[in-house]
Amino acid sequence: MNVKSVLLAVLIPFAAYAQGFAGLGTATQDFATPQRPAEFDFPADHGPHPDYRIEWWYLTANLKDEDGTDYGLQWTLFRTALAAGEVDGWTSPQLWMGHAAVTTPDAHYVTERLARGGIGQAGVQADPFEAWIDDWQLAGPDFDNLRMTATAPDFAYDMQLTAQGPLVFHGDAGYSVKSAQGQASYYYSQPFYGIEGMLSLPGGDIPVTGQAWLDREWSSQPLSEDQTGWDWFSLSLGEGKLMGFRLRQTGGSHYTAATWIAPDGTTTPYPDGAFQADPLTVTDVGGRDVPTGWAVRLPDRGVEVEVQAINPQSWMSTSIPYWEGPVTISGSHQGRGYLEMTGYD
Image (tube, rainbow, N blue to C red; front, top):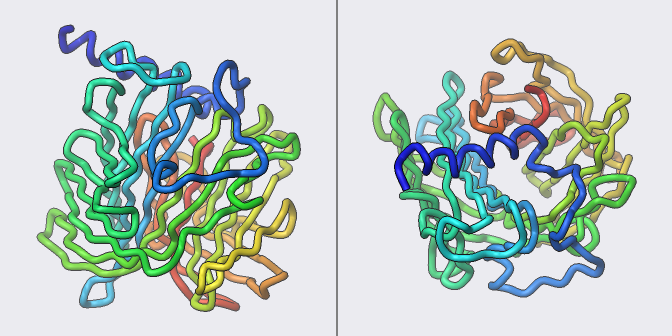
């Protein structure tokens, strides 16, 4: 297979993937779908689920250097399938995409890797845990102790992660409903990683420490056909953590859900309408109007905060473009977090 045919084999499916939100709102065809009650099997469920259409291992981190400067870091591995199941070789229906980014108050560095499954270029194994694409790795003896690396022409990082709390499960014990029509995913997180290591930026190497949050999610149709994008928040608020999302629908309505995470990992799920997020500040990001400041409320927990991007220009100029970056939190609670927004392209 020559270089041109290799590129076509990898990039053409991703072009189709990008046109329709990875098919997230289309019929499931022959793929498996999440069912209630959610039942998890660890460590196996840290690994891939090739009978489902879409899956990700999604890590973000809020970091500081010795001078107190804020940084954000992202490492994400996406798997999407053209058909259920896995086979070895170039006929594999599994596609892999990796995103890595570093955000500073003044710059946003981003890079991407694409791979076809079945040839060893990318993949995930559960025990011992290893997720990789090319030379990028998120790996360790178990899910609680990981080393994370990524390289790009203008940045690199090498980080150690140590879990300081338990896994948490969103929605109904890990069954996360995404629409009034009932579309759902399996969704759990490890929001308690301590992280430390080295950022390598054009100005030199920077030792950093902080907190990281890893999301695991898989499904085959997590969105309804009338949903156009989402605004997702992971907020560390001192006395607890908050995951909340707002799914935008045609006609201007929204579907929301949230999870309150106590310091000991105890969770309280919140249904549609309990979590509120409204844009405060809109920024021109490469000709796009993107909300980079938000009013976020969870009245049941007394949360009424303002969320502001550390760098409003944190655009991910990848095959599937979106906004992703670290945020500050002020108001009823103080803290740091991450914001992801899709569908603004």
